[in-house]
Image (cartoon, rainbow, N blue to C red):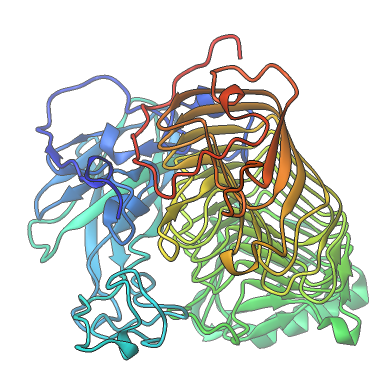
Length: 636
């Protein structure tokens, strides 16, 4: 369990008072200056509800899994009862908003719908229809929508009783709903017109509402007019979304390939309930606020790799909105999938699919850029099996149900891939960015905030049957915020960045340079081997340089493996426990820990020197001291 000082949810009721000041703009719930130059450059500005005027109640901060504050951006939100409101002051001109919210599930699961009134300066009322039909998963992997279900795997050990329920007499009482998660969803809304900086957007739970509403944040932006592309083959289909448009897509794609022209998707909503197979074609929408492709099973797929895959596909400027409400990993219900080489995906908005983009290689030279992926049942993006020379750049992932961005070298190694200048926020399971094996991989300039459980901010793991790490793994210039989570299976704290040896050891050329780890719940850095293989596999030769650690609940470094790491200019402050928690491989011999530390100089903050070169300093579960909110580090 988390210590009470950390898990207590602070609930404060704020009475609305007149104010002319703007609601603060944040990035990942922080002053934007603290994460400058990291993450995606986006068209919207973020404002947290807990910083806005409200007649509701602020919930949090709280980082305890299975709670509403823990899944909120910044680990706080505002709870509205019927008739209450939260009001944001626009920091710049806007004609569209996105509201991230939570409302209750139906008593038997499946979700409900509820209205939210939106007014600007007390006028121009619009109603946004919220839904929890795509939220609320329960239980153990692969999860269920049934809040009354008992454990799906009673033969698994669980932390709730520290037992295996099926092997325990008397049978333990399991609280239901069991492990509720994925509380939030988001909705976009075009406003009546363009409003100016200083105008006030008020979100009100109607007096007739039957339940509470939680508002996490509001994004506002100035959406450009619809784009028109020509010469092109225009999609001719029902733009209201009432009739099936899939055959029209097939006809337009076939004609466009013959004429060597792009397909243009005019403004509208187009119903598609299957895959649209794409190869050697360009499809461009009027912009992802204007062109929506929706349906159950909708996805744009390259041909399978075993059939040669697809080539020269370009998808740009439209939204893909699925209807995925449960996790079935064998279902191919991803927004974009298959194998696509020499291709680009640009400016899409992907929502309510299983995975935003899941590529099954071998494939090569594909780039995803300027794309927004939200409210996924599983990953945001996954480069799976033999993906090479490919990249995800300047894209934004929020509320994924598994790794936000992942490279998984299952059976065939990925190679030469890059995740660069992306933002990943509030993954409800697993990691913000995860690399599972592969050669010559780069993770650079990303921003990851608020991972929740069974993972953390940045991760490299020899697991899930992945091929080994070879060549270089370069991790540079990233920032994590409120990472370093509690692993609920091990009941130990992870690092904001963590390396894990399970299937084999990790001995590639790994460098971590210029990262900032801010407000880590537990550790900033962790290297760990699975206990059952601790004498077989280690993690060796990881190089940390020019690192900024501002706030840890426990240690700067937790080492629970054999191996070694070097440190140069790794500066730390606001460290909650001892600087290094070195357990090695738990043999505790007179020779010291099996994990060695090399001091290459400039490691300020006094966190490293007392533990050189391999002092055993093992505390299995040290007390957590919640760190202060990060602040500018002058001269760093």
